[in-house]
Structure formats: structure tokens, C-alpha cells
Length: 203
Image (cartoon, rainbow, N blue to C red; front, side):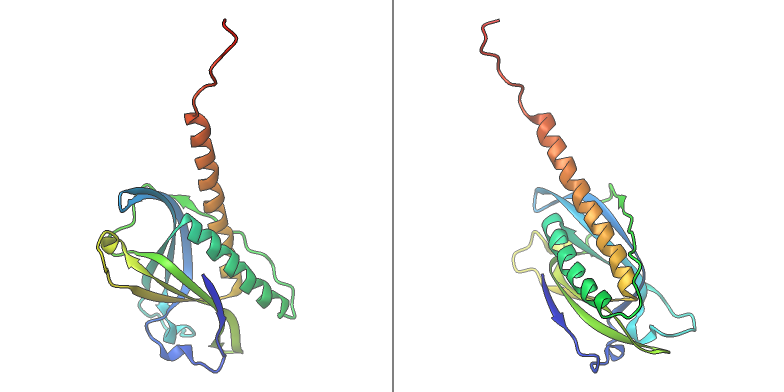
């Protein structure tokens, strides 16, 4: 996971393939990837093409999702928190922290979902009526679920631009809760499955 900074002068609005995220949800779950039981966090993002970010006219919405293994989700949280802290410090008005929520899913990722191998987060800006508005862009790179078991499967990429730092704060909170819950579940499973101590007292 890496962090870069993108110049405001770069007009993201011309890049139609970018998703401008208007709503998101986070799910935790477990699936077998390449035969191995793997806990994951799924980010489901709904929005519009970035060129329609400021449009007041109804436009078609689309949905994308990114599936992160637990260790990648934890690293991603740290990267996002660093960027948001920088944005908050540069904002003249106090920022109210946002709490996120998540849900448990028993439905495994479907074949066309992206399993993320790399997430590059960057500070960026979008053009709004009041001028340039700072926010966060993330480039997700990885392999579709259907290609995980194939050698040399093509690499896919998708880009999400979030509507505000507050939305990213909610994402951070949600992902952190998924990671902590999954780790707590792992510790419980290890404790329950541990063999009982053998008595050597002779009784």
C-alpha cells in the first residue's frame, strides 16, 4: 500500500472510468481463495462516473467492489488515516469524526469481484460549485476472483474518488472494526481448539 499526492491541476473529471463514490458499505466474511480459508473485508461502492460528480441531473449509477485480505485491509486503514489526518489539519474549520458500520456476509465474493493486491491512496481535489474540494482517490489493483487460481491471470484496476474526507473517515472506521472483529474471532478459535492440559499429579 503506498501514498502519493496528485496535483489539483490534474482534471480527474475527464477520466470517465473513475467512480465518484456517493455511498459505500463494508462487509466482513471468509472465503476459500486458492483452497485456503481467508478472512476478508469487502468495500461496496456506489456512485457515478466522475464527470458527473457535480451534476444535479439524475444520471445512471454503477457499483464496484474491492475485496481485501485482512492484512491488506489493516495496511490500507493506516494509509487512509495518514491522508485524512493531513487533510483535517489543513482545514480551517474543525472536522467531526465519522463512525462507520459493517455487516457480516456469508455470501462469498463472486467471480467478477476484484481481490486487491495493491491500493494506492492519494490526496486529490474535485471541482465543485464553491471551487476545488479536497478529498481522497484510491487506485485498486488486483485479480478478479475467477482468475485467482490461474497462473498469469490478467491484472485489473479500478479507481474510486470519495466524496469527502468524512466519507473516508467512515470507511476507515468500518474497516478497522472488520479487522478487529476477525482477529478476535481467530483468537477465540485458537483458544477453543487448544488441547486441555495433561495432569501429571497421578490422580
